[in-house]
Image (cartoon, rainbow, N blue to C red; front, side):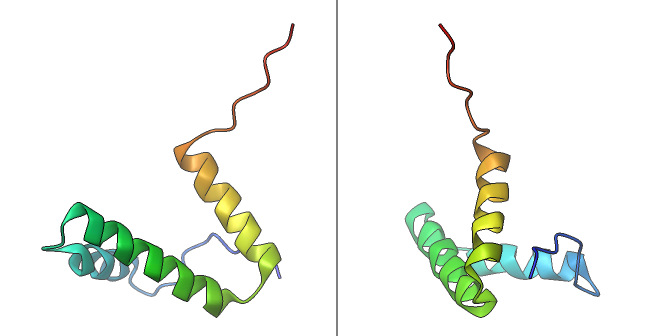
Length: 72
């Protein structure tokens, strides 16, 4: 199975609102814990290490682009 990055929600805005609302009223640390729990639950739902690796690589690249090794 390959990672499908196209929207699969009939209402993507509603899905976004659900995630935002889940964080409402949480302290920063609680919000991070919620994110971690959600990631692990959804990773288990995926159940495919290849897809999980691809999703993690895409997510990591989005927040911390890979730094090229310095050449001498």
